[in-house]
Image (cartoon, rainbow, N blue to C red):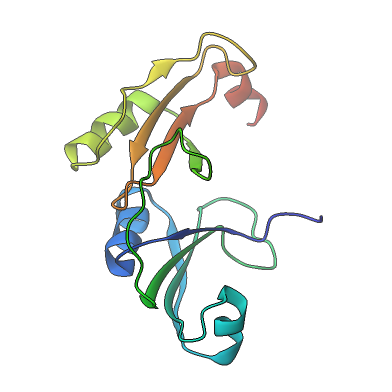
Length: 158
């Protein structure tokens, strides 16, 4: 392995998800496209696949060859049914996002209607002791996490 190219979430409505990640979370939209070709069908393993794709980047992150961090994919064909997004089920995943002030972000996103699992909780053990973290949900109930690292880690990254 040489690195991470990107990570991806399959979403029900690409426009809605782009608005959430771009407008509420501050990602930058890098590229949008429709994939209706033989290569994509072979890659995803569906002979009739048609996908809408958006690639987004976290501002300030070093850009690699792929130019993006998050890929959102809507299957136009075949349409899928939502699955149980419960965090405890095998196969469930989440994306943790670093913030300077988890309580302020929690308040801002809550005011915008974002659903949270919990308010920012102080991390009381482990390497991130002294920081704060909370879980919240995107429009498809994909779990996301806000992480405010402890002050000592924030200072060491300046």
